[in-house]
Image (cartoon, rainbow, N blue to C red):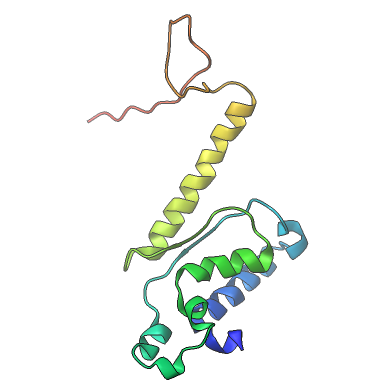
Amino acid sequence: MEASEMDPQQRYVLECVHMALEDGGITRKELDGSQTSVYIGAMNSDAKTSKDGDYSLMTNYTVTGDAASIITARVSYNYNLLGPSLTIDTACSSSLVAVNLATQSLRIDMFVTLTKARMASPTGKCQAFSANADGYVRGEVVES
């Protein structure tokens, strides 16, 4: 019953994720329980719009079947992914913003490695030439 109430976008995303993993040679077993994140850009829900106002078409599965936030949650649930799961709606730039956020998330992982190596400052503050110095803090300078 739930599948019939699911927005076709959700089914398409599940199919595309399956094909992408298959093409990449990544198995379900490799992902199971991993800290893998899901970032998807999605804007409109035509299925939901077509039901608005007609309560006879709504069931107990309508809420999850039509909610954009559930698109990524279904992927995470289906593959038992334990990382963040975000559906981003920024109109026409949704997919681009999703890719940007995913990229930023991958870059942040570098800081986990530095912290575990006890190289990064646990305070996150630069204390150069101080007796309180406890690691280093990365910084970027943009010249104009």
